[in-house]
Length: 288
Image 1 (cartoon, rainbow, N blue to C red):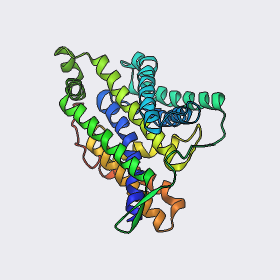
Image 2: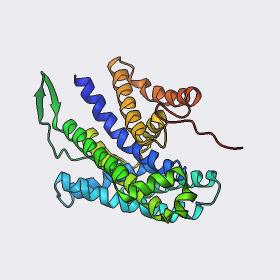
Image 3: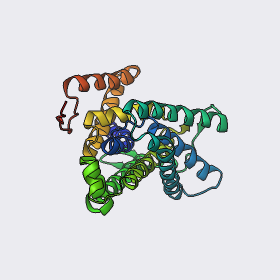
Image 4: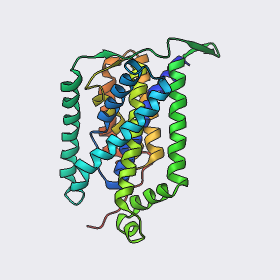
């Protein structure tokens, strides 16, 4: 039971970040490799609110999501929008460049050393069926479930969500029907970056530390989770995130923790060879 809780907690974080990858790819077919760095920015912003401004944890979480959401829109407008009609490789290289820019900007601004994230929730735990579950793990699970429900309702029930689905299916047809594609793309980056910001605060709380390069590994693993579930597929991103979290936990339990990263990356290779569309993705035929 302890390991199940650990797997769910870790998988929840990966799922939140994977949702940002999969939404952006579903709309504009872009792998936003700077998305993991939004997680890192979220951790630092949350750290600032909690330690400097002495703001309550949940208020800091919401404010961090708002700031990261605006940051995501700004990055899209400045870095990606001018390249919308360019070859995909140009946007991909730009995404990598944006990632390096954010990381080095943070190193210059706050320094490259690791810092301790404040233990705002303490070490309290509750006992369920004889298993001690920490308040941190409960908060991670509850926050993740709430955000996923809100995201699902936004995509399925709101007018903007319907526009997102329309643009994802056929951008040109959606534009002919009067949908403002630019607004839809910006809204997609806003949602994805907000989720990454929330994940950043949860990661800081879970691991108790932060550094300018902390978003690299979670970002790559969340990308693999999105590919595993079927990139462009929202339920697939959630499923992939939890599967990666379970895999890492199982590997740790078996005593092979030094190989967990290698196994996760091996999954990417296997899934691309065996089922490139992912577990819940559908193969799309393209005319040559």
